[in-house]
Length: 279
Image 1 (tube, rainbow, N blue to C red):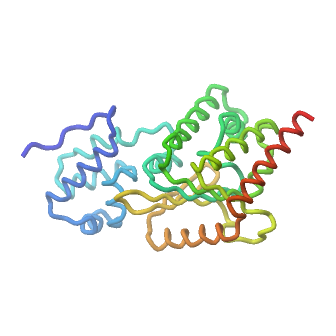
Image 2 (image 1 turned 90 degrees about the vertical axis):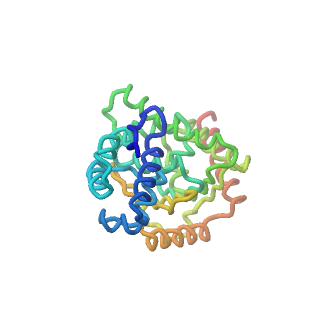
Image 3 (image 1 turned 30 degrees about the horizontal axis):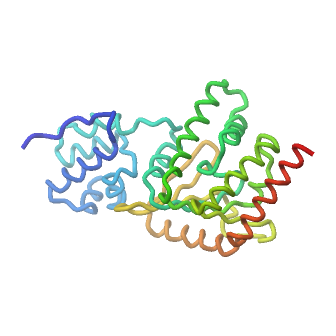
């Protein structure tokens, strides 16, 4: 039987690598759980590698080659599948996001990336690194806007965002930028492209006071949770932990304004910002 061919980086390397992993595992007669035991990871993680929702790291690729007897195939091709335009701490999450069928997110301090406008994204990127070259800021902003194109599809993925009132009132990039940003969110909501709710200050203490939360669901792969901090991030696939975070998000939804009241607040704030910019 001929061995697997090297992957073409111009195609979908991660998806192709996942398909080859599935074929190699099945040829060995191993379940995902059985292979996971040999690799010291969960069967869920193996399933995510096969579905292309997780990145294959070089050390894991070497172990897979040893266990499955694939002659170094996965180690040779792992670099092509790992290439990313995003920073290391966010690359895996961004690539998983692009394959998600549903994304549920709580944003405590800023408008989330998929809902940002170019001017807002540029202001955020400049704030992240005040000394970065203008070309670097433009490159980061272009990457952010490429992610936003996920919403060009009329229905996929489902995006359900709970925005803290603080994210809407923190003036980022100036009042004109905020007015544009909030009008953009309102437009998406009015077109029924996204579900947006605002968690008001009046809600008091809530289930996610410790930070941001993102949940992603996939077709044919287990769900993931993503935790992000300052220049760091972590994907979590433990089923019990992901389920716990789903409950946390449900509590946030219950504490937030209704969709109608949230939209009214967003549009009122956008109008206030525009009037303050041009009295």
